Image (cartoon, rainbow, N blue to C red; front, side):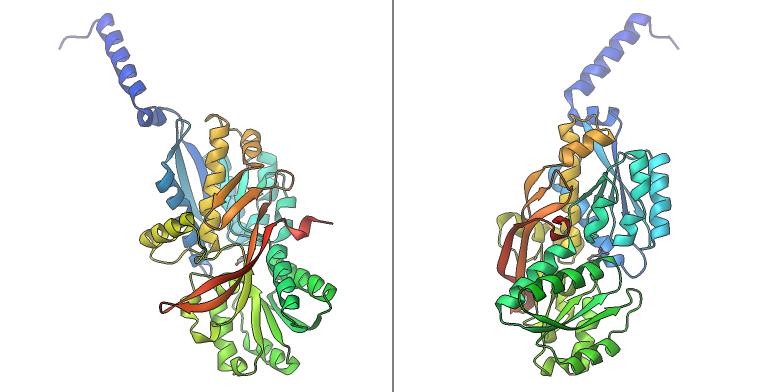
Length: 394
Ligand code: PHB
């Protein structure tokens, strides 16, 4: 065997460098990958939420290419089972072990809140793609949100109810952060408009049995029942509403759009027809971008996209554009700056990451469940334009 001379070795090295210089993807492989730690509930009662989010994040990267400013974007997906202690432990491992550049995900409010101190200390931005309690982004200056806030949907819902001559309502909410926001902000606006809340019912978030609460709704006999339950639980509410014959009483169903979320809407049947909800996203939204999003999402995931899928899709937009703004350098504070103030078209419509609050500004749509071509859809009938979070306005 002959050893190459020093000159030959140098020539080979130069040729190799020239070859890689020609190809951006080869360059991206040389640069350290940009790591996004995506923490999702992929087991337990909120599995569908986690799957939606993973599908949304992956679809964004598939459509836009997985390399940004010369760096390959690597998703490190972890399951927290919907349990906050797991979220915090996994986040710690991702920060210190994997050295992720950004955290993202957060299917429910307690899961997001569990990492607030961690991300502040480590100066790692965390993009909240689903959880919707107003106060989350106040818990750390490193939180940025792409989902929605309950004060946005609940306030818009109350406004519509009053405009449509509903005067007496009962609220039924999940007894934790977003439910309490929903109850408070619906009531505040509804009372301001001259309405009356006859009863405020709170249901446990884990293993809820809605029947005793629905009996109390029947007894109070309101014109409308306002509902907040986290994504996935709406089917059970609808089923028990019908089983108890409340669909024959004329009590109108209204609520936050998680109640009639798109991925479960067709499981609800006719009882859902006519329900009116306020939300940031409908799969029926009329735009070219949304049509393409819905068809590619269904092709990849077999299920209609819901707001968590869109929140994750847009979250990846916010993250990768921030990386671009740093010219691939990254760094917690620089990425955070790059996320603030982004304005762009989402499948939901135009949205902004408010540079002051790091929360989402967006249209909130009033939608009515209707049957079109044999399927149920949330058809947009009205909207509040570019709404800021009412939870942050004094
Ligand atoms: C939340 O926990 O913040 C949450 C979860 C599911 C929703 C809305 C909010 O549909």
